[in-house]
Length: 113
Length: 112
Image (tube, rainbow over all chains, first blue to last red; front, side, top):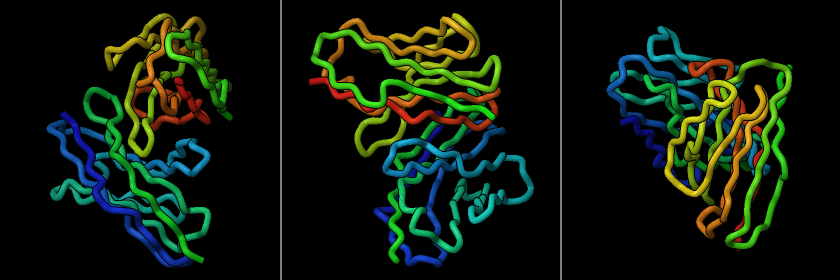
């Protein structure tokens, strides 16, 4: 069975600083994918970044990067130069061999001006 | 570009009443379609997914059902709502089962 763990309490970051949101996962599938989604107060889930289990390099998308440590089974999201609009819930998710997404419980990020 | 629509945006229904939530995707053909439910302050729970017209896979046994009458239309239904059906319902699509999923704006359902 696949499992995603997000245990950080609400996170706070000062505007323009970087922040790391933690995600650990558990799976027995040799091939899998890891995703991060952002959910602002409006409710829509916004896809941010994807990392494949066989990708040699960490994924990056603009201000988002994924710190993928396969041996530790962690896939932390790093947001650089935080903006007020980054305040939202962030969900880590995994796709395994069954092709279904398993989501974590999410982390609330608040960006302070 | 592809867009995904859901309606209604919000819905308040009494216990025992029927439900029909609609999701449509534009700008793509033969998408994989998904229905999720999110309880307050929680992650997403996959309810149904479909890889083609008339092909529905159910993930959680409950009083909900799904149908896909057209290629880009996905409907979530119930004959009799329960209080526990309250939540935020999200529809999503992906080009294949391996790609990232793109979500609609969601429907907030309150069963009273």
